[in-house]
Length: 370
Ligand SMILES: Cc1cc2nc3c(=O)[nH]c(=O)nc-3n(C[C@H](O)[C@H](O)[C@H](O)COP(=O)(O)O)c2cc1C
Image (cartoon, rainbow, N blue to C red; front, side, top):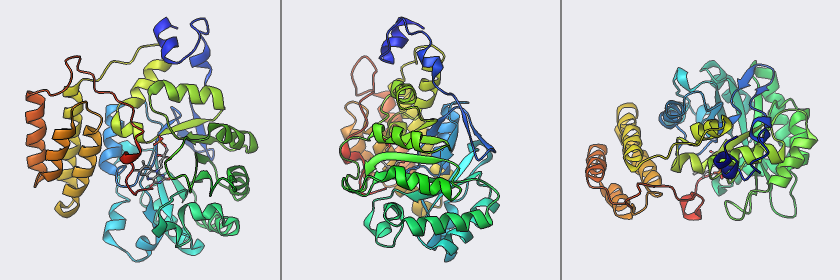
């Protein structure tokens, strides 16, 4: 391994095999191959079909699985059009995991059957969303406190699905109930074919750090694949976490928003190469592609809001991008936003080295989403 790659991975240069020793793939339920074992994490308000496809396009062969935003089983039961739209996807996203949230086992079964019919490769049950309106109705992280309900939900899925189902959990509800290991065992016992763990409690929301020791405990406690989530900020972190925690795979969330090409950087590091720096021009062009696709694919009433949210988050990590973000927020249309980006590309506003990387885990980045 090149010395510079070893340095990026915080490995001794002599440890040439370390990056190659980490697992590179796993299978969910004996049917869905996740290769490579680096997954785009579900992010409400962000990982819609447009974003998932963009991430796949920017990282050819380097994203093993993508997960939808959390989708309401109540919305599906009500035949709500906006909820149904969240199930849309394009073939190049696959394998695709559709994440559902709710607390009623029968409804979960019905919603999962619909999602399977519409092309999901995997159904994931959200057991981590901390948002009060989700938790108060018994869903999301509340399921970490309601083992019997979670068990009933998973049994309902077993009764209706022919594709595998998985859970995404948190470390626990709070520091006094860090029960991820117990919930993982319960889920495995009820047929969950993979456990993803975000190593923060519900009470922590996004403060503190993801507890990778606890994630490693979960890995040791079950036989199904375990995927770790939380605070992978740079490509090298993904390989370090795979190596040190023993998990089968990792999920990347916020860093994939700030750096949607992070998956190909992980692949490059794995191959012993040094990832190419991404220039400001590429970053602005990427945002422009997202905006154009949102404009083309979403109804106008939802496209502008989503475009603003996404562009502002993506620009947030451009050095000197505050003014651009401000104008993007005020722009009256996607066309106007794209014009602002084009102008920004013509008149660069950041440092002369062209670097745009800043660590993405700033808590103001989260908003009130899951
Ligand atoms: C804006 C945002 C939305 C999220 N939405 C979801 C969601 O819908 N379902 C879910 O299971 N986790 C959701 N998460 C949690 C992420 O999947 C991930 O576990 C968490 O952000 C930690 O990983 P990271 O440090 O790589 O971002 C969300 C996180 C963020 C920042």
